[in-house]
Amino acid sequence: MKFVPGIPGEGSALTDGQYPFEVTDAEEKQSKSSGADMIEVTLKVKGVTVYDYLVNLDESRWKLDNFLASIGFEVKPGVPIDLNPDNFIGRRGECILYTDTYQGKKKNKVGDYVVVIAKPGAGPAKDSWR
Image 1 (cartoon, rainbow, N blue to C red):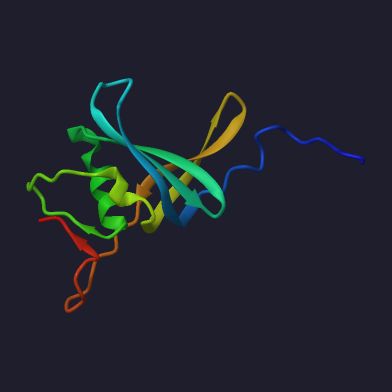
Image 2: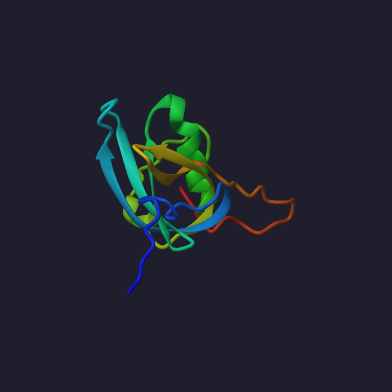
């Protein structure tokens, strides 16, 4: 077999843009940098695995809020909820990916999650936190 090598790490990242995803794994952990509680989610996006870290800090609350809304959970501002990462597995949503290069390797990162704003008269969200 004749083979012409390319650059290792190239071709494994999707181009920047908005993509549908499915949550294939979710695990509660602690952030190594801040020590705060976080949920590490594993997303399958067009056959590519993308990891994201949803950290429970005031300055990053927006991302967790947007993730929950993207996968169909109704969130109520100021009302505490207990999150079970197992409830995320199999859920689908939309995310905005960008490409990061570290030590010559390209990989996708989640810039944000797409939140669908319901029109007046639309049906209820898929799930509701009570």
